[in-house]
Amino acid sequence: MKNIFYPLAASLIFLSSAWVVVNSTDYTLKEGHVIQFKSKDPTGVFKTMKGSIKFDESDLENSKFDLSFEVSSISTGNGMMNKKAQTAEWFDASKYAQIKYVSSKIEKSGEGFNVIGKLTIKGVTKDKTVPLKVSKSGSDLTFSGSFIVNRMDFKVGKTSDAVPNNMNINYSIPVSKK
View 1 (cartoon, rainbow, N blue to C red):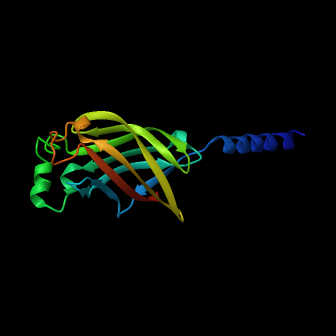
View 2: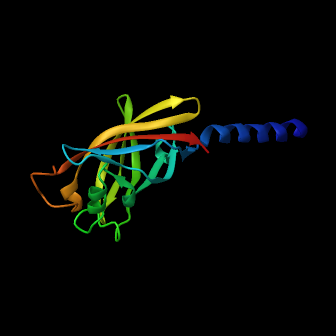
């Protein structure tokens, strides 16, 4: 009887632990991401992004976004405007080289998700909820969405009639499993 009991008990412990442990999947950022800002003027993109993403829609508690965008990679289509965007008045790239977003919570919302986290621009950190859509292609995913950032909340530039305070942000981030 002992010969049957120990292997059976070990098998049951192993199987029960397999049902309890759920790990979010680590993803690697792929080329082709788009981080675009739009207004009547200016409009452009940030070309360089780094970071890590863990995501599993069945394990949102352990899912996480930790992303940064190089201010020096800004591209508006106008070289002089790109340089001006990096000055102390605007993004102050010499002092604040990156824009960062780090999630603290991800929630299901209708057909997609809400990513709740902290957005840091020019040394100012604010709570920001970002809507997230997930598209699948095999084991690859693309995260996308749109949201608004009020640049005055982050002391980027000065209030003017030429540049609106609210910037529309559109993003598409393709990833593959590590």
